[in-house]
Amino acid sequence: MAQPDLTLLASLRPAALDARRGIVRLHPEALTALGLRPGDPVRLSGRRETAGIVAAADPGASAAMLYADDLTLGNLG
Image (cartoon, rainbow, N blue to C red):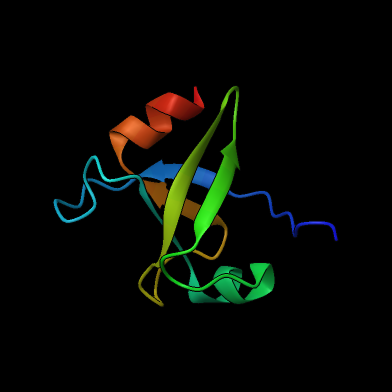
C-alpha cells in the first residue's frame, strides 16, 4: 500500500516544549489528509531525509506549513 504524500514548506518553530525532541507540527487538516494521529512517526524529505514525531499545530497555523525545531530543519538540509 502506498504511503500518502504531501508537500509542505518547513518553518522554524522555536517552541521550548518541542526543542530538540524531533517533534514536527502540522495543521489538523494536514494530519487528517495524511491519515496521521499525534505521536505517529513521519519521514521528512528535503535535501536529506530525516524522521520526526508528528503533533498538531494550532488551528490558526497555515495548512501549507510544517513547523519544526532547528535540529530537525538542519537534518533536512
